[in-house]
Image (cartoon, rainbow, N blue to C red; front, top):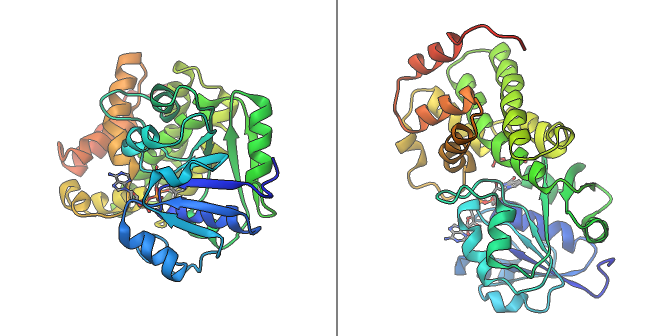
Length: 328
Ligand SMILES: NC(=O)C1=CN([C@@H]2O[C@H](COP(=O)(O)OP(=O)(O)OC[C@H]3O[C@@H](n4cnc5c(N)ncnc54)[C@H](O)[C@@H]3O)[C@@H](O)[C@H]2O)C=CC1
Ligand SMILES: O=C(CO)COP(=O)(O)O
């Protein structure tokens, strides 16, 4: 599988799906990009741009957008890049039996399932891989250097997919720990909200470093309880993505947290937004899953309290700082 003469499909023309389509098309290969919104299909096919979700990027001519999932029927690989809460619905409509590379980061509300578990439930004949890591869409679309985890429990397929997706400035690192790659990507979004809160509330950089380190301890405890491997959590899809999203307002999750830290309500911040801040959806599901597994996640609990507008910011911060002293 080297991409020549093959056609890749991408489901979801938000910022990340569009950037990945651009990456795959960089060598002239044909890419079919499914978009929900007709205006996005028209803008891509009419002017090779996606002003709604990835403004300022001229898209490669070999990208064709469609609103019909059936148009992905001739693709040999399909990247799934919808928001996590819509993954079940779009994967159900995807062509059966084609390798699915899941790029969404989150845990499904209601079921508590990871994205791979959801995809396997609705497309049992499709091989599954997960692509996750520190990857701001705009940077990838501009061709800036990026490394990412590609996890697949079939080593042969994983190597084929990695060769197919790799580009000179885009390096997939292979793993067979699908669960670990998924948990890192889902949990870091919640922790990025916490770091944004610290920024918005003016708590300083020591607090941010503490939240990243103690948040990583929470991610690791939860991941190990779910069967993830520690080295995956310490890799690109875990710690790498945690560091990226916890240190920049380019992150939608960090920005959401910053708004909370500035004293704005979650309801106001979440209403009418077009782009997705996955951590807001993952947080309560993660908290419930952690409680059920007997895993302590105090930073995640604090984020949940703020997202539910359940306690004043000062009270939430005081409660975190007043936790009993313990060994690291
Ligand atoms: N933006 C980024 O830099 C990165 C995003 N991701 C992940 O990719 C996934 C998609 O995020 P973005 O591309 O950033 O999205 P976005 O925030 O740019 O756009 C929102 C997307 O949601 C779609 N959408 C809204 N309602 C829908 C529905 N009912 N059914 C299906 N799709 C619907 C829209 O069509 C659009 O594609 C998320 O899980 C995100 O965590 C992962 C890595 C980087
Ligand atoms: O996942 C991302 C980078 O790896 C994007 O983060 P946000 O969704 O917080 O913008």
